[in-house]
Amino acid sequence: SYVLTQPPSVSVAPGKTARITCGGNNIGIKRVHWYQQKPGQAPVLVVYDDSDRPSGIPERFSGSNSGNTATLTISRVEAGDEADYYCQVWYSSGDHVWVFGGGTKLTVL
Amino acid sequence: QVQLVESGGGVVQPGRSLRLSCAASGFTFSNYGMHWVRQAPGKGLEWVAHIWYDGSQKYYVDSVEGRFTISRDNSKNTLYLQMNSLRAEDTAVYYCARGEAAPGDVPLYFDYWGQGTLVTVSS
Image (tube, rainbow over all chains, first blue to last red; front, side):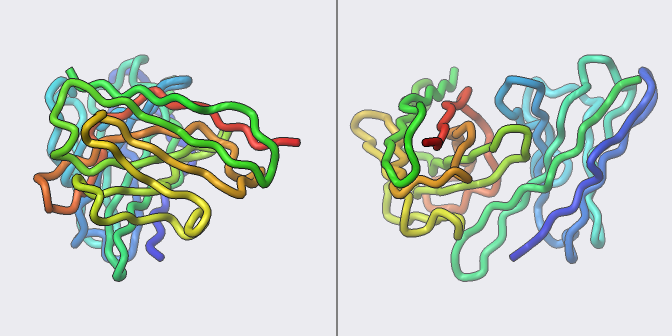
């Protein structure tokens, strides 16, 4: 199975830049997708295919992926960005499997 | 606009069965693969099952293989999850999610999610 590793928590002051990492074996050759989930709400896709943004997602959200680490970067962090963030990949080992990282709680100080 | 509305959750005893439904609207349901994703209380997201756009292929996480069955009725724009032999560890909010891909391609990510339905397995 393929394991994605995220830090449990990241803290950042308003207006600063938050970076949330997602580690996986040679993850750079996979496409990584990121979701934001606020308390009591369904997840929302914020970055897909490593670095693309769905319509309606602010440009402050960006992604990168290389080697063994993918990163979600949130610039000019706002209080409303406080949420859990999950990375996700698809892989095939005969069967198709979709895997999530354990999630990172972003706290805006 | 895309809407996914889950129903069918509730409290069920261990070993019993439950069927979840997800009513889809706002897009051509028969063109998209669909998923079930769950989230145990206070825990992270776990993909559960996927069904191809035409129902021809189905995939499951190992922990539910042989107990859960995903299906769809494209004439009713509805996705289902039949859950048998339920266990306490199946307690979670179950989300249906659309897989973004052209028909016949593997959907790599989930572009729209429902609000979820809570399943509690307890005696």
